[in-house]
Length: 364
Image (cartoon, rainbow, N blue to C red; front, side, top):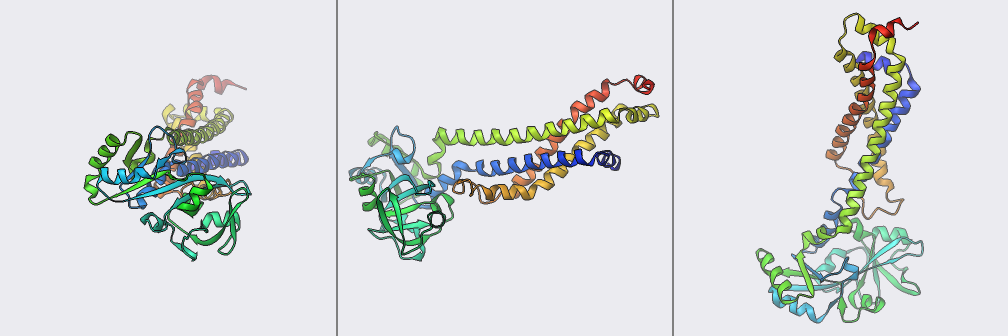
């Protein structure tokens, strides 16, 4: 290991640049993976936090913002499920004047779902006013007593600021159900129905009855609601592909550095072979160099990885990204980077195995 370190320090600039490249690859991998991990689960967690066991939307549509359920169906849902309570919710998306996306939720202030939006500042939700999440308040530059332009030319006073455990919610705006209906032209309609059962053990049976008796609607377990969305799965896969690509680039950097190192040190390595070192022992020294480059880059990349996750807020992704990478993800990234470094060592080792000791030693 000491010999491997000495070999790398012979070309400090090259070694430093390689380590920095690995650090960047590691940081990008951790940052993107932290955003992708639990991507669907974060959305499902929002619905589960309402306390509703079942979520219902219009059958055959994509995201909730496209769903339309008639208010009259809420009572039919309650009867089919034998539910204690059915809450209608409007989900919409608009944009702030600074072009940042603004999720908008319409809820009945008397429904249990409204407890997700308990204000930390200002007053509670009431008709004719809006509540802003903490992130949305910062993005819009508005506080209680100010106003928010929900739609172009349609402003509502800001009654309060709420905080939740979900970044997506905190990046949004909550209106009384009647106000949301008028603004988004959904009179007599809601986007989702949140069903709270008397007996949660009857969830599966209640879902079957809703889907059978109301075929124009689709009911599912709240904790699994978004799992069927192919669009979210594609986003998750694409993010992981980008993360893997960053590690491939890092491995190529290690391969390039070790390849040049081996070419430059070939006479020295040939002498080691001549005095009794086996091919595998020489190959082990090259592997050690690759491991050192990879581990040094990973350790150096831990801090940038945290910064990368935080920087997603600057890119407007703070509502989707995990607030911090887990220790398991950080350690898993180190292991993957180490494997990448070892794989990056293989081309140099292959070149070394092809070189003939006698030919190298005869070279003037």
